[in-house]
Structure formats: C-alpha cells, structure tokens
Length: 214
Image (cartoon, rainbow, N blue to C red; front, side):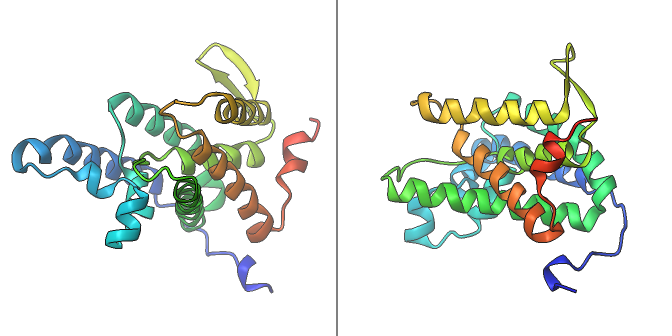
C-alpha cells in the first residue's frame, strides 16, 4: 500500500470542539494581553513576511490560523467550523480530520506568504482560520454531495453548488476586489490544497463528487 494512503485507525474525539476552544482562548488572549502586559499577541502570532524572514518566526505558519481580527471574524469562522467540521470529522475520523485541517491551513499560509513576499507586500499580517475552513467546506461537499445547506438560513443549496459558488465569488473578489482586507487568496489556497489532499491522500477526484447527479 502507498504509505501516503495508509489510513488511520478510526476514532472520534471531537477535535472540532478542541479547535474551537483554542481559537476562542487565543482571541481572548489577543484582547487581554495588550491591556494587562502591553504584549501584542496578534503581531506575534499573525503571519507576516518580514517577521518570518528576519526573525525566523516560523511558528506563524501555524499560529496565524488561531488568531482573528475581531469578534465577528471569529464567530463566522467558528460557526462554519462547527457546522461543517463536525460532520467531516465523523466521516474521516479525528486523526484524519486534524491532519487535513492543519495541512491545508499551513499550506495555505505558506502559499500566501510566498505571494506576499514576492509581490512586495511585506507589511501584511495574515490571520484567521478561513483557509483551513474553506478546505473543510470543500471536504463536506465532496463527502456529502447530496446534502442541502440553507445559506443564511433561507436559501437551500446543495453542498457542491455552495462550495463552487463560494469559490467563484472568492476568485472574482481576488481579481477585482483590490484593497479589501479579506484574504481571498488564502481562501482559494485552502480550497486548492484541500482538493490536492483528496487526490494524494485518498486517490479521489473531488470533481466527480461535486458534479455527479443524484
């Protein structure tokens, strides 16, 4: 068997809830530490090209995923992680899910870092779990292609339609939405690395699941 496709022994440990807890804890520290100790955790943990290159702060490729730019940023990401992540974790198992989440998030950060560095965007601070969560939404659509998601609680969409629609919006926003603070590039990178994960790890082409008829 290809070692890259060797499955983990299935177990379910509610990793999603732990991830949500860590994100909430880090956000609270982002708010509290500057006030109590004048320590800016956001600048220390968010991903910045200059800090990575000059000061070797390579942990930022991981820590950026657990920092957020505000309460609404945190709430939207954690809600998406809970809704889609719990189902994906139950299907894949906790170890596989954690590997998928961390791999796609880190790789999305590395890709974004490379683009920022080579385009001269040295002062960008990348933060948020959106890259990994976008990959989780892709996994949900691939694993549950007949699932119906109520967008904004109103509009019913099949999961593949939702994720392909989101991807088209992100691509359009990346091309035409100059000046936005939203990291559309990182979202697209999360989607791309999630797609690659399915190809390499499972030998499955997500396109077949996303486009198959009921």
